[in-house]
Image (cartoon, rainbow, N blue to C red; front, side, top):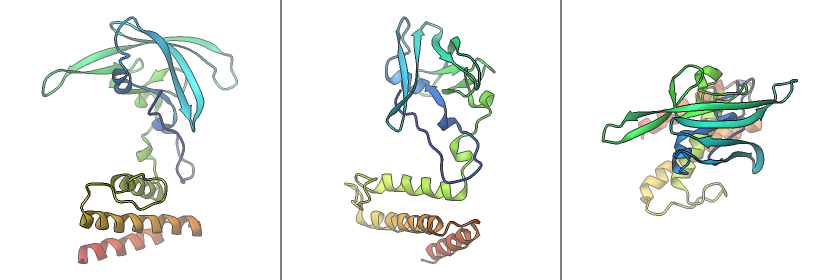
Length: 213
């Protein structure tokens, strides 16, 4: 099933996050045309290009039924059939938006994840989003990568190729910020800082310099 990410940042003692578990996203299912009733098929997940799990499904008017096997740690395999119901809500500019109804708490949710065998919302799974458990360096890495995708053509191959249509002055301003973040990240990794106080001091200097300019 596309669009599922996994992996951890550079922090220590981090909690499992919603992004790290197997999950279903109602927006993805809608985009693939999988919310129509009387459909049968299989959803699969990958991690680093390798298969990491799959489940069967069948769709009904009122929801989607998930059919799979689950084995708790140290336990035996269990057959699971879980019906997840839909709910429609009106949109401001017409039409409706479809949601999952969490089987655990009846909240509306766009994403349900399986941490303990059943697909439930993040509240029932007691999982934060990745951004809620990130450390300072993780946030910097995410900010740098997001900025790179915005300004570089073919970001990820370490080439500073300006994206087509971007004004040169805008590109140079964002490139300066990208390089500042990249330097701080490289410095942190190279010196293996046990504290981020040095980074805070550096970023305060950078930010004050930006304001003065």
